[in-house]
Image (cartoon, helix red, strand yellow):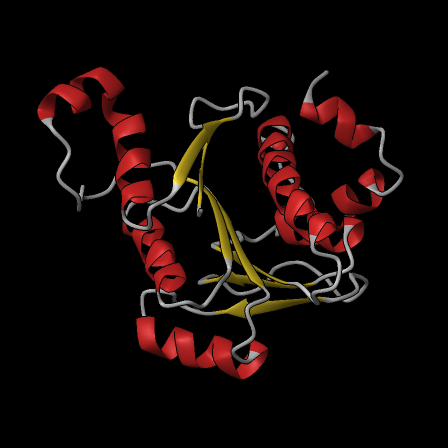
Length: 207
């Protein structure tokens, strides 16, 4: 069964879609990406229910589907973060806050988040399709100890920062090489989720 079918069966699905106003041409793809990330986050939150989890949805996009859906499904605080100004009314979404911020301002971003969440080890970073250097920047945030866990679905390839033999690059291809490079930057793991309806369907996970 597809992620989209699973999503549509949920009681909150119509509310989530009404709030997010996703373009119909991209709806199935974006729902499947959100469900793939949600599955990863859910496993952490359920297995460690004693923590007050905070989700940083970095590069959330204008519709904030990840943030709105996770806020509906789990008892967590979610911060949706994007460089663009907020274009939706999220006032009805409990435990969610939209923050307009340029994440390439590395230290200012860290200071801003620390003011919001403190220094507890209860933060999970998620990100759907951060482009190029934005993906490396998110990995760098995780490397500072900002989050305990990180789940990224990378897209457009950026600069390869780690040494990867050409033989391996040839075998993996451009997209998997990019994902592998991101995972090497933080001793991470890769999982391909075939239920995500996009050729970019690999999740980079922190270990």
